[in-house]
Length: 205
Ligand code: 5GP
Image 1 (cartoon, rainbow, N blue to C red):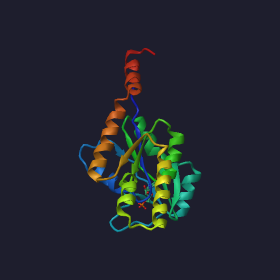
Image 2 (image 1 turned 30 degrees about the horizontal axis):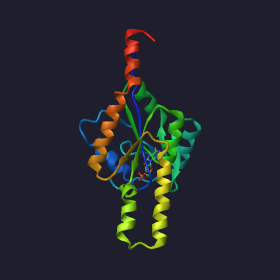
Image 3 (image 1 turned 45 degrees about the vertical axis):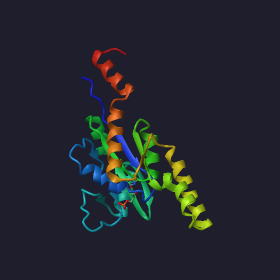
């Protein structure tokens, strides 16, 4: 019997765009069918965070040992701490036919793209990117330095987008969630995916 593999969904985007907020809002909904990949980190738990729920909290030594053992699909150092995705759970979930969802920063997303080119990569973009020009023109209160810094950041963010399949603007958390869910549904209907299933079913190639 042909078993379709699950999707690997990666949500990433610039620092401070609200990836964590969107991901939490998404997973608080009842109709979410995908699994969340809990990351490992060496940063200390914040108040209310639970080991094994929000993150697997590790020491640097433990984390470096996991890197050596090839237990991480990707990892990155971000603001002085390691963050990484345990590879086993990702593979098991995909093989079992369920979708897995990663919320990670951009260096990690790049590594996942190399290993899973067929993944579904979603870039969460700040609304400031589309509002930028408007704001600069209409406000007129910004100094030249502030304007050029903003433009530089916006350009870097635009370049980061190149790696991704979809861009979701985080103008409102609920809207961003709806767009992500719609993208996942559409991805499941992609012709290549569906045709493969039918061909296997009919045993023709
Ligand atoms: P925070 O410390 O605020 O929870 O997360 C900091 C950053 O690390 C966020 O941008 C978050 O998306 C990213 N992050 C969380 N888990 C992982 C991971 O497993 N791998 C990578 N590369 N980044 C992660």
